[in-house]
Image: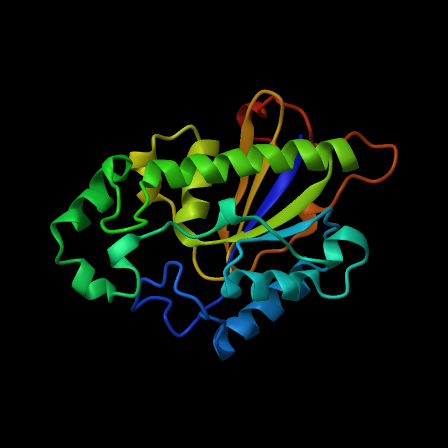
Length: 233
């Protein structure tokens, strides 16, 4: 159907030591801006039908670097709240070392499908996955209808959201999503077909993007739902 390029935002001052969540005003730091610029350069040859982002500043800034001077719809970042960060409730803004001492931490690690984050506005992990996957389905249909089955689009989101989308694409229970890694400014690619999704790349932080280019005119695209037997060439 379409190819989805999932990008995690670049580094911020809070990335790593603190659970930023929906904290307003968290922007890319110097490292994050350099990461976003490098990613934009790497993706420059890849035609994109649209560039979409979580509404949080760090994602919008990363997506804007990719949109750059692209023409048409892909030159303007569109936001979709469904790709926003998990709403961590009372955990928002707290150091991860401190949160690791909470009883809920072990459940987050081993049984995330049972987790609802505490406090006002705290979201269930399952609900966060559901909204993100529903957004992917909507955008897949929209992009395919407007640009054809070989079209690609980019979504800039957050680590847990990307991991949840990948778990769905792999047919994994949400309790297995902690086995997926999505580093800052990494690229994960999922190709959706009528029968199944294919996870084409995972947590790519520097690979060649030639394989993401559309087929030359007259050649068939990569929209087959069949898996290659024996691994392919």
